[in-house]
Image (cartoon, rainbow, N blue to C red):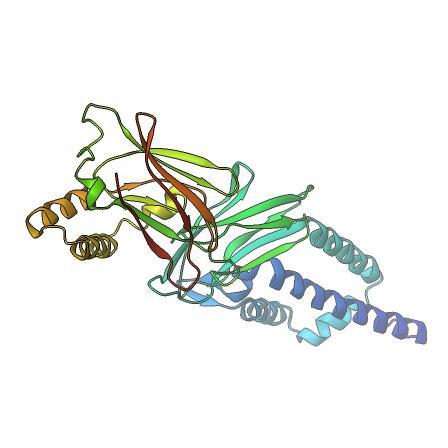
Length: 337
């Protein structure tokens, strides 16, 4: 006669609690995977194709059932009725607590396309250490990143969009159990950048040297803002670009931008009745000699004091207020001299 184990009310009650604990753990483990292992949940590479984590689980589950000659439900029931099943479930619960407490993750996704930009490059820094290699995102990229296991200390991460420029850096606290899920560029704040195109008017431009190599007392252009920040640059027969940092200025060095700047200078000289014979070569020289001048990022309403000095003599002394409105490119013409 086969040995049978009597099923008592206590055994049934214990199995019922084991099933409840097993179900809760299954849900929590699923949430953990969804939170920190997005790449593996959304799709796992298998023999040149993709299969979801759920599909992979079902494949393994059915293979085990086929090899054991029993249905999955029977296998779960037998496992939960085992004498040591509660200890195994408690161990799984302890492991889950450790995983949740010591796992963090970073994932970046493409948000929406901005005007003229359908690709973004993001860098993630922990002070002077790059946490992730530069992440390139286009319209098809979702959940680009990775999990980090068993971190013990919190950190402050800085996210920077390096391409294109024009976005403020984003700083977030990164605890050992936290998740950073960012939409690019939706979660970043666009800078209020005002580009200043500074060039000499007809009265001054004829006196300026063609280049920095020309000997003689230099013409010095200085700008001081209301914060007391004062900067100087040597002035030549050229276009000075200011109002933002070096990276943002470099992004303005395009054929379209230079053509628009040339037209603006030419229009100003034409309105001042600058002779056509002298105007064309002068405008060409000014655009050829354009120079970026990294400065603070001055906002609308900022008051600037502008001077042109040579040999201790102030040739030009003017006040300028950054205009308000949607236009972010402003021409400052240094008249006089």
